[in-house]
Length: 128
Image 1 (cartoon, rainbow, N blue to C red):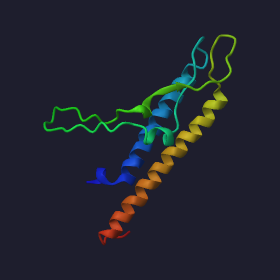
Image 2 (tube, one colour):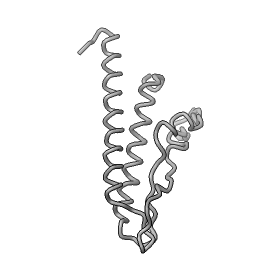
Image 3 (cartoon, rainbow, N blue to C red):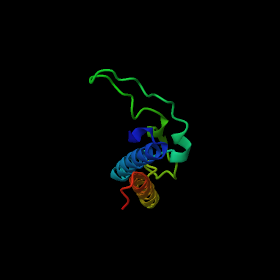
Image 4 (cartoon, helix red, strand yellow):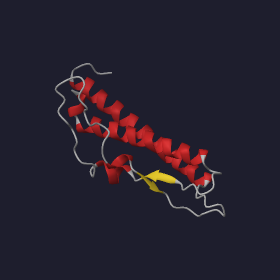
């Protein structure tokens, strides 16, 4: 039922984007001293949300693949940055900024979900 509400679908996609971005940031920090490692990041959520192709597959049996999670929002791109003498492009300071941005995305998705669910409860006459 809730997957038909575009606001909740968008909030769920934003949560997944923040999660995947946080994973990449953790990999970047873990490889901060690895020679030749290139820092990676995800494209912005606004750039990827509408550009992902619709891959909703019809599932008629429990064993079928639904196709959720496919699309361009999970593609890592080189985040650039200045190369160290060993070829590494990870800057811990830049990664700290990206962590704060990913947390902000996640907090926004939670706030949107809460507000949407509160609106649904109110419309059903079960206000908070």
